[in-house]
Length: 121
Image 1 (cartoon, helix red, strand yellow):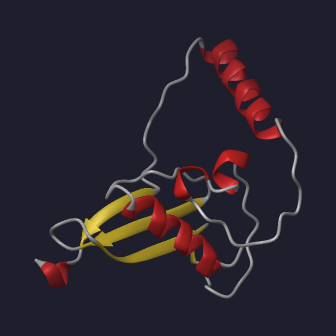
Image 2: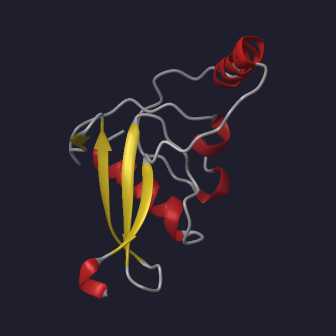
């Protein structure tokens, strides 16, 4: 997907309920809003580098989201379609954590943020 197409997906994610909806791995983003919570802009970074709107990036998601579930629209070329790999990987990781630690402990990494634009204050 292009950086521009990824930005469109993130915009949709926020504007459908004025909240963070789509979770990401590797992608860090900040939603910039006005005081009422309306989206003004996005800052998108991958491994500390700003996303280039014209560059192509490899994106992995589940088929529900990829095929328009919850109103999402992905523009890009399907490289590999394989049912179950993502779900199985998540299950294996959860089983590993349970075996190693006895539980799964969630802690926010701060990859996704919402901030009010200073010019709107």
